[in-house]
Amino acid sequence: MATPRILVVDDEPTVREVVAHYLTRDGYEVRELHRGDLIDEAVAQFQPDLVVLDIMLPGASGLDFLRRSGPDRVPVILLTARVEESDRVLGLELGADDYVTKPFSPRELVARVRTVLRRTQPNAATTGTADALQFDGLHIDLRAREVLADGRPVALTAKEFDLLAFFAQAPRQVFSRAQLLHHVWDSSPDFQDPATVTVHVRRLRNKIEANPEQARWITTVWGVGYRFEP
Image 1 (tube, rainbow, N blue to C red):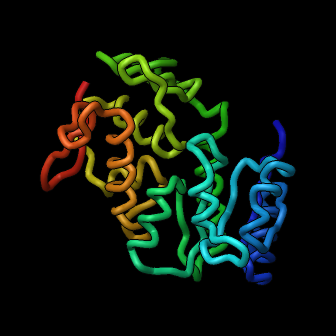
Image 2 (cartoon, rainbow, N blue to C red; image 1 turned 180 degrees about the vertical axis):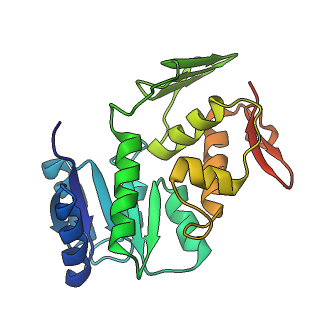
């Protein structure tokens, strides 16, 4: 298997050095970058499997990269010193797969990188499940990581697909946001804002539901969480 490639984009040399050191020690091939306006070129040349991306960058912000990129872009973990929930939510709304708030534990970041890559690599395990899940109007191909809603292809980010697949493999079971953080993000409310789940559910509904305001597939169980209706 090829060594996963990670692009680390941050304007602080110390941050880049620490992150690159821990990722390299964990067996990844790492390239560093310090400007936001050079990301597209670096992605095209280096072809990373994941980008660790600061929000505040010279040249262009990390959010600008997310805005320019479509749903098929490389997975992104945001590094941000911003603590306001609105900033984190905006990054998730734009398609980031995860975020880590500065100051952070390098070992936690490496764990999150490992988790995102495990979920986004083409050979992600599907042991014990069917290769595809078929419902009335919704088709989920677990191996190809493709979704059809009423016959039309639906472009999902890696984390959106993970969340939908998790729901669909446990129909009508109610999950709290804490449970979803644990199972889909390998995290908990102690380390990650439960609003992450809310944002991803909303994005999923906007993509797979005929009427997101009256959800057919992913319904809200008030005061508890969400469930998938087969």
